[in-house]
Image (cartoon, rainbow, N blue to C red; front, side, top):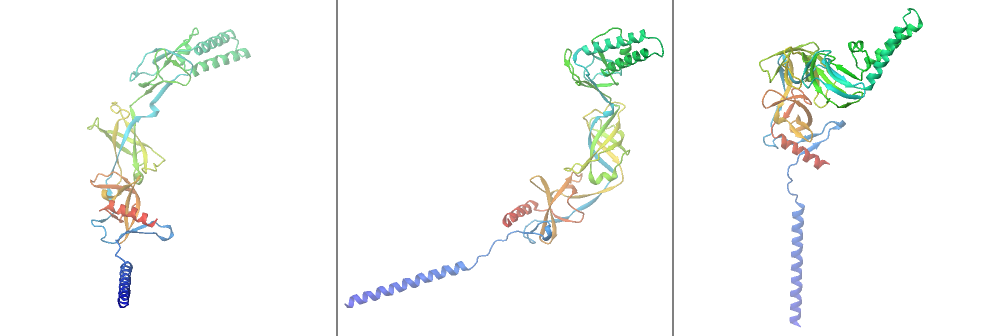
Length: 378
């Protein structure tokens, strides 16, 4: 009996000790879980009231190497320079187009041949010519048979001659060829409408042609055009009639003179540029279509905004800069740029203003923080 009571008290004591131990462990675990551990620093997006742009808040000194610099306004010299491509003056280009259905019987010229106005180019066979010539000869014969002045028959015959002659002109025949008709002939020589160079040849001897087919293109290069681009903020510095000079890689020691002939009424929305058309004198024929040229326009001085290249980050399909709005806070802004002669800098044509401060060091890291903060806030 005594041994049994001793054993019972021992078991009760052990149970109490185990219960106290477990309670102590649970209390210790609860105490540790209740104590918050320090959290890592995270960037934050501040959404402006009234629909303003979002601002990235990263605090000062959080990004080692971050540098902020001002957007500079640089004085431009009194010479505006742009590059362009030489093209034909379209007022000096002419084409020979077939106005009948037929085939090429003879071809006297080849690509790049020089021709004179009125020179025979190709002999074109078509029954349409023969029919129109027969009508013209018959009208002339009728007109000769009615020689009495002041009669209705004479006036009618004369109108038939004029109508038949007009039909031959519409088919592409020259006056001299019409006057020389003595009998119907299905073959007619097509003549050069201007003096120039054969710049396009689309015919082969024996080839079939249809009305509207372009056979030859002739052009002259005594005067040529250079088409170049001018940035939107430089448009006020140029005007029609302004003198300019052009140089090419082919003739670096030769300077070609000209004037601004046209300024495009449209602005390219992607580059914010407008095209100018420069008319250049080319009496020696050195300038060839498709050549590249540098155009220099003497104008009044202007100004431009420039930033260091490392102030920009390319993201998706555009360039962006981070503009400081206050200490440690930055607005991400889309920027339009252009090339600049100063090494390490780019010209800003839109998105920034003179005097604004932008991030120029660790821009890629700041951009990554921007995306990270937007991901946390979404």
